[in-house]
Image (cartoon, rainbow, N blue to C red; front, side):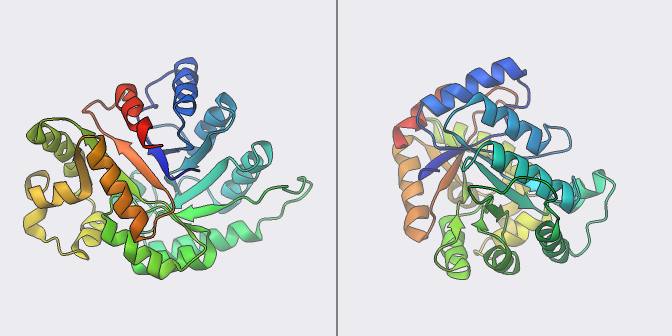
Length: 290
């Protein structure tokens, strides 16, 4: 996977041919892993991963994360197995419980998410393999875990965690709860810009929507942030701790913080104010970190 990868949802607006070109450039830049999320308005996680895997030769493709509400456990297990068999060692399944409003939009009831994740994982493990050939390489899975209970579930029933929108302090907590030997790959948002106020404005545009989601507010509150930090798209202190606003040296310093706190891999989410266009120029700059 490498120590540094990319996280993006900015491939959704590209046609398949354009996306192949971008993916091949990402691989050529030296990034070992590409993470992408899943939403009801974007690409379905497993078919999107298949496209990315088929377009590249070495790149690890990870879901960051696929929603357990988008398919039942049997479908999850089957899709993971097909990709693990076809692309040995190159597909990493990240699973998450999503958020109440997003789950409701799918027509489900967001109730007892920890229990729902536990039952999904156990049902995946009980899924019969039938006539499918045995896997030559294991098919790992990680959880989009923020709170202690979900991190413990990631330790007990998965291969690690992919926490989203977290500071290095969370990485230290997650490593303590996961223990050694489990993959820890936090998400880290980045804005490359010389003007701090412009960078913060871009960050706040992203953060404002996320602060409407209770899961993130609870997670941030564990690290001393209060309701006063959540208004107006986030206080300066919140923005600076959750986003790297600066140059490549600032990004490298934050990556080092996560690694020193116990991360194995950091997924860099580059924001440039564009939602439907991949930030290729910025990715080329970040390639120096790998």
